[in-house]
Image (cartoon, rainbow, N blue to C red; front, side, top):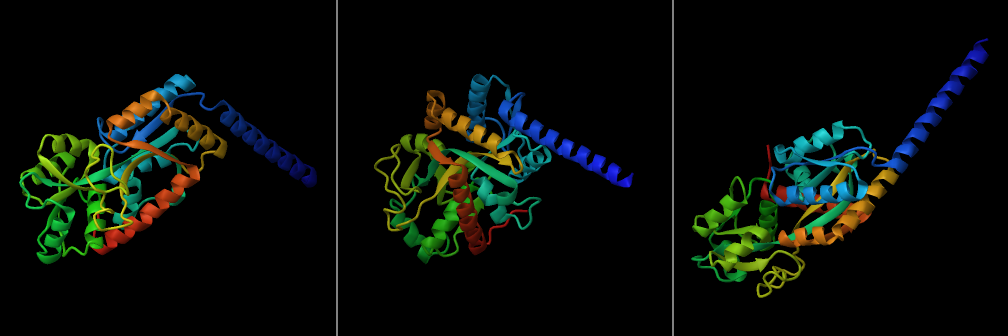
Length: 327
């Protein structure tokens, strides 16, 4: 009798497993069958928010399902990532984040998650270099002049949009590479405030996003010294790259990418990746990316994952060298 009972229990267990697998397969085949939520760690109106809404608009039109963008700013993106990890791992909760995804694990001593283990990189939507700029009345007309002052005086200052921001990390990496003597970091609440301080001459330089910098450069309020990417930007074709200016191999860009919590079925991930790639290739998304002074990211899945891993490693080294720590 016990033997029969055990056989029945095993049969029921096997039946439950098969049913669960069939349900999982059906959910993957039918995905998406309900609304999708895209969480972002910033307030409305910025590039991350605009890209998320552009992607959501494409999902709405192509999948005939509502895609909702929810803004959850706070703690360097930690709030957003925690919420995403608490949701079911079914592909209906996604995260669109900036390269802050690779900075947070470098500047926080402890995190409630492991970025590489707990999140799946799906697609890099866009990327953009920063411009190294000084105020119009600055005594520095070339990157070499700025570096020379930084190597001798030890009083050169740089602004950023806050501790642990991409602007701080890029400036810290460059200052280390150029052997600048203990440059002074001056953090602000955001990019506009940082640019205002540089324009006023209160801070010497800043690595500024192209979308913010180009209008002020054209208005004669900022002077560009170099571009952070490996090559020149078509937006400022006469401005040399940092690499051209004596630092070969230096290449830093900000990026924005789509992620899912680990545990989402692989076939669902592949479906989201394919649809995101299709979205980036539409005229609407191309125009949006151009308006953000950016270019398509053109990195998906494993390739995007390798970029994320490499960025975490270089950011961690730079944070350690420059004693950058967020609390």
